[in-house]
Image (cartoon, rainbow, N blue to C red; front, side, top):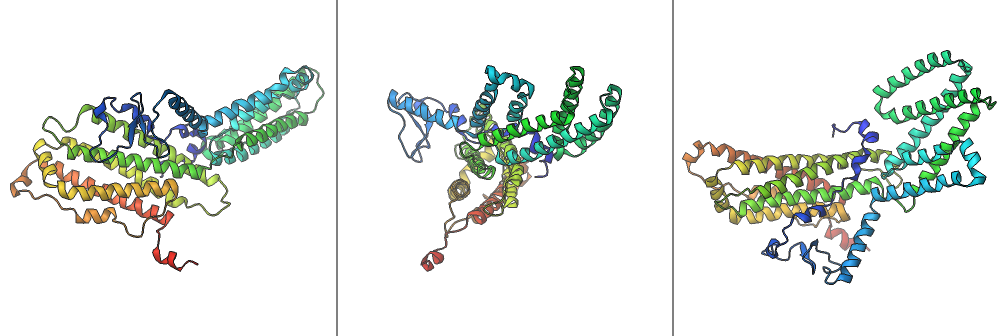
Length: 460
């Protein structure tokens, strides 16, 4: 967690647009009839009447006509339109159009130009964020920077009284001090930037007033700037609240659920390779490409979730304190697991065919219960984060499955085989992965709790 600095909070909000959903990987599924595996039961994917692969939806079956496909596309468009990032762009566009309308009417164009109404639109554009924490943070930092810049502009102008040489010297000294804070205090960079912009605008506009023989005092220019910024802030706040936004804490919890689900998919793909080993090659080029693609996507998700976690400290704890330390540990565990999975995949890839065949044959029966427990742990953690579902009172934990699993017996001479080192690294990495999963399950269990039968029987 130490990799995310305070600078990331204000400088990398664009990364929040990276979705955690795995729907984008559906396109990688082969369109042939044999591409969907139904050997263990109904697949989580299904086909519509045109042969397109979709996620199975418990509410409706796959579209079976053109009319149903049309409404399905409409439903997908509605989901896309109300995605936080897309909705933010739409609201920003609508707000810019509405705030620019006075410039196009004859009876308001004059004062709109005189009062520099473009500042309102600029403020709206720079203050619209999809994260509520960043929205609140930006509100205070930019407002403080604007007020400080207006006051600084008045002070600088009163000191120099419009003398250009004096303005150069004083502005250099002031900006030198501001740049020192800008470079060495990352948290205040936005406020310092707004201070510099506002101060320069106040001084420059007042200097132009002198050249144009305009008698308006400097505090009028500063007041206009502050008023326009305030209008832009209010407009951005109103647009942000329509419709009611999802807080960054809820978004973080849901994204973590998707990340845990994707790690489960990645782990299951490695189990599939072990189960379906063939002498022709257990790691195909397509499997390696899909593994790396999903692993890279998970790492991008974790990076965006770290930023969301940093934004949560700027959201007021109205209903109660936010357990930030627990979510920080969840992020640490999922990041460790994806790194360990990389190592597991590399160990399996370097394992010789003879060792791989023996491992697959000797551990098949015990591995079924072991893998089932591990994947169940993933599902419980993902469902608990997504829907706040509490854990059942009786559960087989990943550490229990690890304790019950045993290594296949090998002859003593095999210990001298160089491939034994690769096998040992595979076993150690797999053990480390299970222990990280155990920590993840335990901390999610602390968040959602356990359904205690005794508590339910004693409730009136």
